[in-house]
Structure formats: C-alpha cells, structure tokens
Length: 446
Image 1: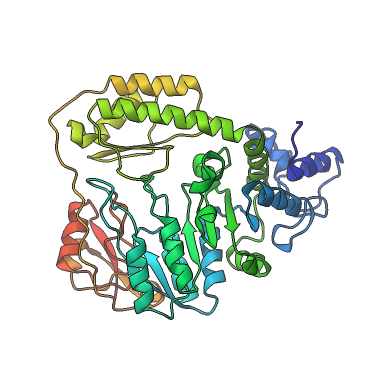
Image 2: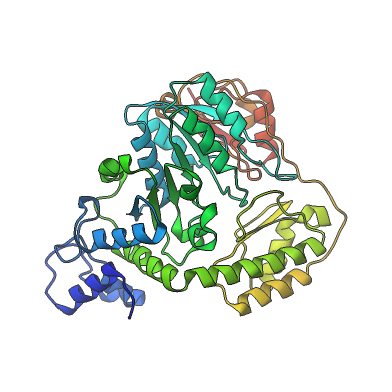
C-alpha cells in the first residue's frame, strides 16, 4: 500500500516477523472463531516495542499523531480509540483540572455531563437562540456567552457544540473573540465536524480561535467506529494532554481503530479535499431538490454535509419519508414526525447519490404541518451534576416526577437540547414536555 501511514507500516512489519505471540490479545491474530474478521484480525495487537504506546508518546503511534498534527495544522493532534467521549473528558480536564465553573451551551452531549460529574465542574448554562428555523434548537450567541462571562468572572472555560446534530453551526469566531477578552479558552464538541478542515479550512473550530476541539472522525470520515481526533490549538496544553487522556482512556486502546485514523489522515491529504468538495456539490443539489419538494432546510450557517430536512413543511412525516427511503435501499441517520436527517460521506459514490435523488423525487406529498419544538424555561438548579449523578436514585413515571430533582439528562430529539439536567428540579412544564416527547420515565434523586 503506497501511502505514508506510519502506524500501518509498523503493523505490517510486525506481522511479517511471524513471531509466536506470547502476549495479549488472546486471539493471537489467527483464532478460527474470528476468521470472518479477515485481515483486520492481524492488525489487532497490543502495545509493543514495534507498535508504540499511545499514552506514552513513543514509536509509530507517536509518528502517526505527528503526521496528523501537520495535516490538521494544529498545535497537536491526538488519537482516541474511545470516541469523542474521551476527547471531551480530556478537554474539560485540561481546562479545569481542579473543578470550577464552565460556561456551557445547552446543546450538549451526555458524555460532557458525565465528565462534569467526574471532575466536579459546575455548569453555567447559555441557552440557544431559536434562529435556525422551526423545530430546531438554534445557535449559541456570542453576546449571550459574553453576558455569562461578565456574571461569572471565575469561569474556567467556555464549552459548546458546533455543528450540532442537525448540522447547525454557531458563530465560533464571535464566541472566541468574547472569551479572549476574559482570558478563558473555548472548547468545542465538533463531533460532527471532523471533515471541516479539508472541506473548508475556515470552518474548523481551531481556525476560528478555539483552544481545543473534539473531532469524532468516524461520524463523517472513513474511520472505524470509536475513532476520534483531539485537536489542540494552544501549545500551553500540550504537556498535559496525554495525562488527561490516560486518566479516562483504556490502557488497551484498539489498534484497528488507531490504524483507521492513521489511514484516514493519509487519505485526507491525498484525496480527501477533492472527495469532500464533490460530496458538498452533491449535497447542494440534493438540498435544492428538497427545497423544490417543499422541505425546509436549517437557516444560517450549517455543515454542508448534513442533510437536515423539515419534511413536515411539505406535509410528510419524517418517519414515513424514512420508511419510503428504506424501501428504496437507503437507511437514514434519524427521523421523527417532522424531520429527516441524512449524513453524507466522501465515501459515497455517484450511484449512492443518484439512488437518493431518485428516492427523494418519489416521496409523496401531503398537507403541511408545523413541527413542535418547545424549549422550557431554565429549570432551577438545586444540586451540581456530580451530587445528583452520584446520589441514590429511583425511577419514576415522568408525570409523577414534577418537583423532584433530575438524576439524569433527559433530551428529546428534536431539538436535541436537554429539557432537564442532573441536579435540576423538574418543573411541571418540563414533565409535560418530556411526556409529550415520548419519554415515559426518568431517574430522580431519592
């Protein structure tokens, strides 16, 4: 394979030694019961002198990360076989190693909530402005971040998600400019934006001033599930990154996942930009067709590779649309009564795109209806996430939970914004909204 992928080359050399394995893993690269896994089995090794140790910064794994650092133009790029979750945990640890307050956008993944509990962090919530269209949570405003920083001068960092699950992107550059005035770093959950550096460099969080971001590579790039990049933009964090990742990460990282990150980086440098540009052109054509069919698209800046269609505007249930697409041989990312969400990849072929185009043209029409997207008033905060998540809990029907303290995150989708977080008191409005969203039960603090 004529590519510059240090980890791949090291693993190939290791396989050619044909040494008898008296080390982990137990399948020894040849277990008959795992034969269906094929060639991948031989790449599933442990940390050896010939492969390097991920968290010890040595050997081919280090060379692979250095190659990724150059490719992404970062101060440092680090591999995660523990998905974006590990990257998020490490970012929060780096920004607030001794606990404290974090200014946080309310559109947030539960892994960040759990990390806050483990690190004893206190969130100061900034709620979304519903500026992306009906049924969507919208964006975090730089002005709202600035207001939160003024009121909380002891905050350690700003944390937000961009793009969100529907591809909606906040004004990261504006947020970073505000945070810079208060001397705090901006951390970005860019799980759905790993491809942005090679599609449009200016859209990547580091290019917009973020101190760190978590790129879940497997979501939009050719990487095995669980593969992610932790991107560091400010060099002062570099000496502490591996320690932060080792605090949460497995001591047995999956080498097939690490290998896929190395191979993907090499592919991105050779072919990725052209492939992503072509995929974006197809996305534009498909979005234009969706508009002609009467679907609404998110307003404002969005990730070009997310196809997030409000089918309700054309009188079509997203679930019904998904069923019709499935009958045409297409499996979607997500569908509900109002929305259809499809994630495009540079690995999609012209045949894939034409199949989707044909299926889209065949979808039925109906009477328009408005998607529901109720975001309640911020619930009262009674306990920290750590106190609530680690407290004794019980499970109740949501209609009986009003007045109790939430012991979990409850997040209807749409709009993918949590109605209640651990430590917040469940208001009657929250309980009603959860019930209407199909959430029947919830964990509460005893």
